[in-house]
Amino acid sequence: MRSLVRHELRRLDGPAFDRCVGERLTERADGGPTPRARRLSPATLRHRLASGAGLLRSPASRIAFVRRPTGVDLFVDGQLLPLPRRLAFAAPLLTGAPQLGPAALAPHLARPGFVPLLADLVNRGAFELARP
Image (cartoon, one colour):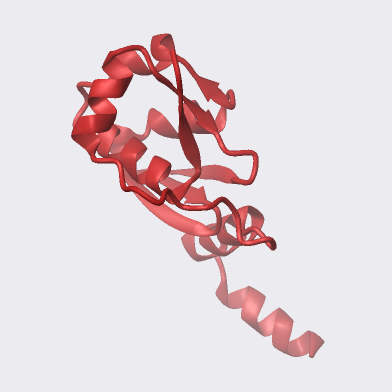
């Protein structure tokens, strides 16, 4: 068994190792957060955020990231979400404070891909809307 594990670990280097570790460290044994019953569209989320709502990370969610030359690998509850370089700023923002208020989010709402990323995370249950 040990030699099998050693052999497999030797095959994992660089991005493959990072992916394996990122997925395992953020994987939830209890199944993680509950996805939203009603999907929230990026347009609706943009409107709610522009109106002063914030986001609150679910206590059941685990999020981490690894920087890459081409962007960032964001890990959310055992799932890899590769982010392009233009969205790399989002990884430290999303893994920092558990509550993201309007002041933290507003400067980024016009950036291409940011609101759809947030909508995906809200729909997964990793974040929920925080009322203003």
